Length: 112
Image (tube, rainbow, N blue to C red; front, side, top):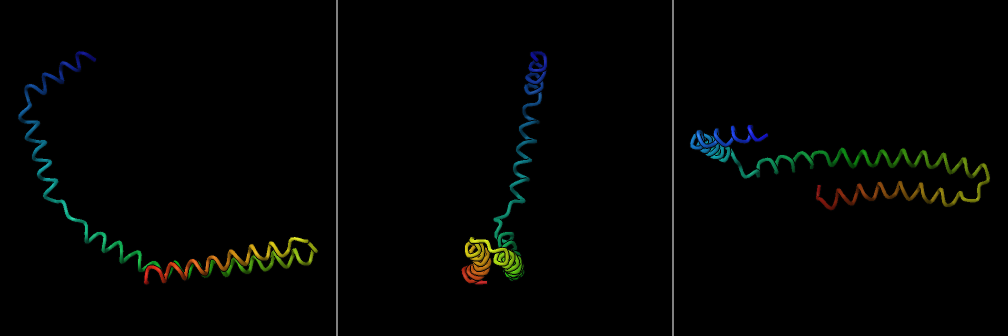
């Protein structure tokens, strides 16, 4: 370890100017390509807005599927005579309403 450290120190002493100038050129070259990022942010904004309609339609479809599954579950419990049929129906119905309301609110909130 000590020998490696000595070699590194001697290399640094001999090539200090070369290493510093290479580092400086890399920094200057890297900042020349830097941009403010507004174009990327605008592009991301447009892409996300283009997916909103598909996302809300997907949420509506998931809500419909959950409604069908919930209706079958509630029907099975009702026919079996379970006393907690009302709670199960409220839970399934609430989840479907929540998905539809969230999709509509997100769509209107962001003005898409």
